[in-house]
Amino acid sequence: MNIDLLLKIAGVGILIAVLHQILTKAGRDDQAMMTSLAGMVIVLTIVVKEISTLFDTVRTVFNL
Image (cartoon, rainbow, N blue to C red):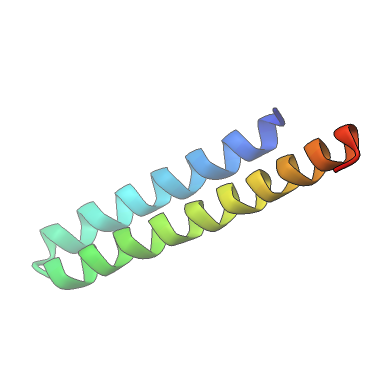
């Protein structure tokens, strides 16, 4: 596994956590929730791309 992938996911997670805390303290709970959901979508798209690459590699290795 590439360490860059882990660093990207961790960076997005830290950024979203900080934004969520700032928005919650400011009384904007709805925007804090939307920010958290946006962060989850970003991380899920990164993970789905990596899973797609894994499946392509498996197909290539086993000639499927």
